[in-house]
Image 1 (cartoon, rainbow, N blue to C red):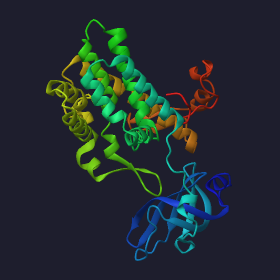
Image 2: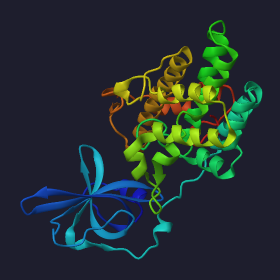
Image 3: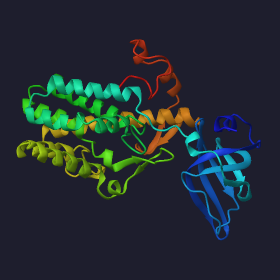
Image 4: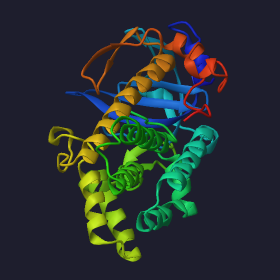
Length: 349
């Protein structure tokens, strides 16, 4: 049986199959232990509870294939599989047959092309141009930049999310500087802002990684120790040193990158000190919040949750009951740029 087939069955129906273990957590106490697993195949994801677990036995680990027999269950309107400890063992199906490997979505390449175009049209300073091309002309960097998520959870937490978020932030900064406040922004201030907008989250390429088997996103050791802001600043400084970028220009970019999360309580290293810093932090915050709602809509479509869903990023329940309508009828479709049912795999950035 596949996950999709199990989800379609009524409660208390016997089920069986082989699934990839995405999560495994030991729960319980005082001799009454059970395992909480998250299982998947190419058709979907479902939690499973393994009851009467023997604490002295070897539990499945992330990346294993589990073969089981159980019962289709439900808890608080959410589907699950209930399994007794003796009815689960190591499977014999290759893990590669049960998982879709992360791949660059079409919109990832489109966003990257948009970044190239913005720099070609807007970036005149030779040092900033060389600094940007140091990264963007590297095939390995382009592949990873177009593939990586912007987060493990919350906003833009899917393949291509990082470059989509980056392109959005660049567009917002461009609009703020060129269309709203051109009388306040200097040419070098604008070009530095656009450069920093492109690379403000570049450290996430080192902070986050994909699990080699499951494809799930996790925090690297260095990511947990230093965070993406410091990692990104180090990447930019290293490139600047190789290119002999003037120190004052490096300092301008540093100030923007280390302050882009806006407030110290949001883990920024330094709150913005300049107009351009405020523009970048504001653009990053705006797109992140919209991305958090996008994730909530996608979560509703995936698990059929209630119309009001708790969104951790906001700390409150948000209305997402119109997610299906937003997918069927939206401004993008009215302009003829995408087909009905557009999702994160659509070509649009």
